[in-house]
Image 1: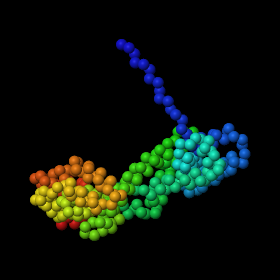
Image 2: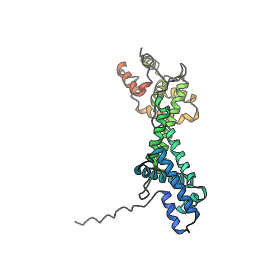
Image 3: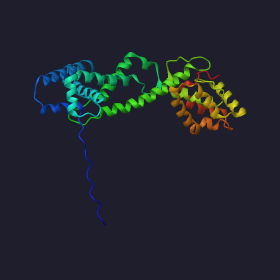
Image 4: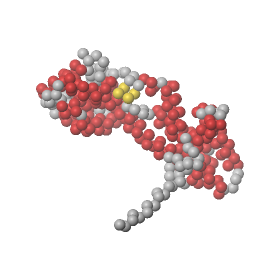
Amino acid sequence: MEAAPNTLPAIVVERLPLLVRAIRCLSARAIGDESVILADELAGITAMVAEKFTNDRTAEGIQKALLLTVGCVSLGLEHELGEEDDDTALDFLVEEGAEHAFQAGFRMVRDLAALPEDSLVGEYDQDPVYAQRRLKDLFVDICSADPYQNWAGFEKFEVQYRQRKAVQAIVRAAGWLRRHHYAGPINDADLNAEGVIAVAIIFAIEGGGRIVARTGQADFERLVKSVRKNKPDYEEGWAALMKQVPAQHQPVIAERIESYRTNCTVIQKIRTRTAMKTLFAEFENYAGSELDADYG
C-alpha cells in the first residue's frame, strides 16, 4: 500500500499591527527629529489611554495601554490608507501625526459602540453609564494588539460593523412599524424588533394594508377567524404592507416575508383545524414581548 505523501504545513504569513510595521521602516531612514517627535507622540497617547482606560499607576495598566495604543493607531492607519504599504503608513504618521491615526481609530470604535448589538433594545441601552462601559469593552476587544504577534483588529471591526448595521436596519424598520401602528404610535422604550416585524407580517395576510405592530390574544383570535372565513390571498396582503413601507426599510421586511412565507408555523397552520390555544402559543414564540400584557 502506497504511503500517503507528506503534507506540508500551512505557511503562516506574518501580519503585525500596521503601526509596528511602519516603525520598522524607520531603520531604513536617517534618524532625525521626525523619529523623536513620533516617539514622544506615541508615549503621550499611551499615557492618556492609561489614565482613561486602564490604570496609569501600575505597570500592568501601562502595559495594557501600550497594547491599546498600538491597536487603535493601527486601526486608524488601515482605515485611512487601505491597502497601502508600510512605508506609506510611516509617511502618514510623520506628516499627519500618530494622534490623527489614533483619533480615526477611536472614532471607528465609538461609531461601532453606538450601533445596536441585538434586536432586543432596552431602556438601559440609552443609559450613559452603560454606553461608556460598552465603548470601553469594545475598545479593549478590538484594539488590544501585541506588537510582536499577528493582529486582525481591522478585520474584526469590519465583521462587527456589518453585523451591527444589519441589526440597526432591523431595529429601524421595527421602529417605523411602531410609529405607524394602526391604533397610534407605540412609544415603549423596550423594543423586540423581530417581534414587531413578525406581528406586522403575520397580520398582513388578512389584507387591507393595516399595520399591526403590537397585538393581544383577542385580536389574534379575530385574525384567525377572519382568515379561515375569508381565505385572503397572502401575497396581496404582503404587497399591501410593502406599499406603505418606505424604501429604506423594504429590504428588511421583504427578507422576513420571504422567510415567513415558507417557515412560519403560524401562517402554515392558520387555515387548518389547529386549536386556537396551540396557534396562539406558537404566535407567542414569534411576537415575544410585543404582545399586550392584558390578553383579554
